[in-house]
Image 1 (cartoon, protein in one colour):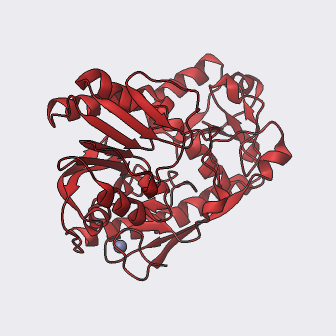
Image 2: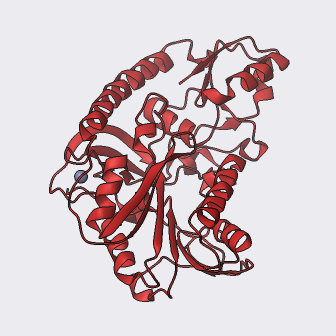
Length: 377
Ligand SMILES: [Zn+2]
């Protein structure tokens, strides 16, 4: 398969992460339904020219981005704060005022609403997951995918955040947006998760089926310039977890920026780490005393971990969110429980997917009388 970023005709196998739920955020009311939920293979390949990672086994028909699709990131207060800071920057430093903003993948229109409020802008957003009845001040929401034949009205800023990594063919959409670009030298703001983070020392369980692509700084720039956009600025944000570029329509440029070799080394290390880590946990969970093990956290990272190492659903899974209690996780069918239920149990080890919450979780365990080691995955 060719590289979705730079167009290089062939990719090489990186690591096969096995079958993963197509919809990682969907909880089920029964174990059989959960275990029968659609899974697809996460067979990651790498482009040695630009360092791009992509799932070469991706099958777009397994995923349906309808109104039920839940993009969990958007519920996070930290993410919302970051989005507000970004809107301030685009208004104050890039002069997006009294302008028209188009957003592809606008969700419920929160970002466009912030742009409207802060800079007296108007906005149009495209998103198939938006409720057709939703009304947002200063914003027109189109409950559909952006399609090239829609012919956008002139705009000064085009925003596309956390969309490109979901697309089977991001270049076709980006080229269409570039060719359709109307208005006076409009600014494009593009943002994706960072592969440097996903595959770096702090990331391990961040690969999910809906993500076809894992962009590095180089592969994102390679894609953007190959689609005829001139990169003006680029960087990372959100504690290094996101990559962004600002670009304007320019000439087609097929070059790849420097720094690919370093990224390839990081990816090779990830492949090794994935194989040894999953082997370790599969052996540990297979041991006789595995009923003393608990996973704390039933989010996307937890689901990725469980699908990789505990197909037999032997681990106990707890989560602080009461809406998840008594429900079942996609793929493996683990039942999510209230952490309070651990009080009557002999627990030796509590596994956590996000080390940020270590103190909070240790404290909580102390309160319910559980004396166990807390270990980050
Ligand atoms: Zn490439």
